[in-house]
Amino acid sequence: MTTHIFLFGPLRHDGLRAVVLGAAHVGQAAVLPGAALVDQSGYPALANSHDAQVDGVLVALDDATRARLDFYEGLFDYARDTVTVLCDGAAVQAQIYRAPDAPPEICAPWSFSRWCARHAEAAVLAAREVFALRAVYGPEALKVRYPMLLAHAASQLRAARDVQPATLRGNWNRDDVVSQQRMQPYAYFFGVQVDDLTFQRFDGRASGLIRRAGFVMSDAVTLLPYDPVLDLVLIIEQFRYGPYIRGDVNCWSLEPIAGRIDAGETPEEAALRETQEEARLVVRHDALLPVGAFYPSPGAISEYLYSYVALCDLSRDNEGVSGLAAEAEDIRSHVIPFAQLMALIVSGEVRNGPLIQSAYWLALNKARLGTG
Image 1 (spheres, helix red, strand yellow):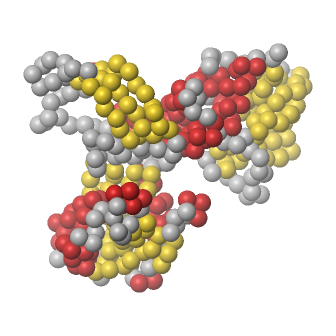
Image 2: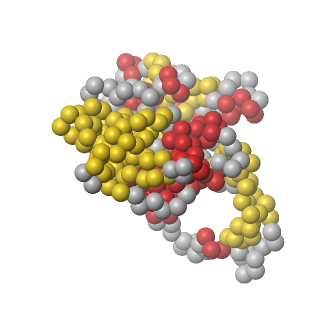
Image 3: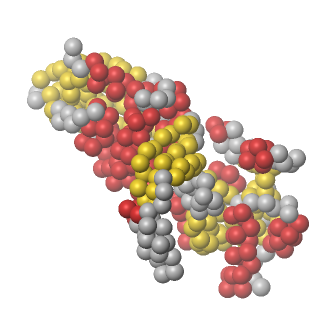
């Protein structure tokens, strides 16, 4: 039995559609009249619009292929609905997948061309990964995992495009590492990857087969706001699970503003967004000063950090508690003199690596920023 499905939005992309459906399905061009696509948190949502139409692709799917599509659209909590589309001028009854909630009355239009430019490559990689995991993990676990898969895919693309100097270290490349077997024994919000691999040794020989395991994360940013006139910094305090696992008595950490780089964002855009979310502070793009980009613990995790200091005006009015309720964030901001931050580092009260690094960078560069 075959079912007519009208695919719109990201699934108009040939590469993504082939991954989701399991093979290339060209389909036929079709339109949904009386509707428009609006942007709902980066994803397309159908809205009524009498003088508009939504472009899409009409495909006929068997039960097995439709089950793949059900799984993928279920990651976004989309459900099937029935509509009438126009294909070659003829009306065809077809099923679509749409968000359960109607979009807000005022929304920006969703652009397919903009989505292709910013999101398509990562979406294809993430779709391949989520379908590989589907054989092992259930839909509820993968629904939680998918946003991080998407962010990790964007991180992989960023890594492939990075300039990676090799003036002291050897001029190695990924062909110098051969994975014989790859497993993912854990996948929820984060993931664990295990590889049985060999790597090229310094003596020119291949190593023996070894097993390595790592925590699969995505790129992230940190930002330390600094007022060069008043010599003040803003740092945040929040509960952290890592110190809790380790056994710390006090599991609240003093840190810079920090957060994951979402797919489609640049590191700078993520830094500005996180500053508003965590500290309710608006920072200009041209006020960002790069501290460095680095792996905090390359032996165990894939996370890669872009750290910044941001020049801004600060006062006690910037203190308070904020954070995203949807992520159960409870974040307190402290505005303190820079000298106090350095004293907190010396005393051991600050135990966050990126904050220590940013503070020392600021100590080295304060003179050229307007203070001594």
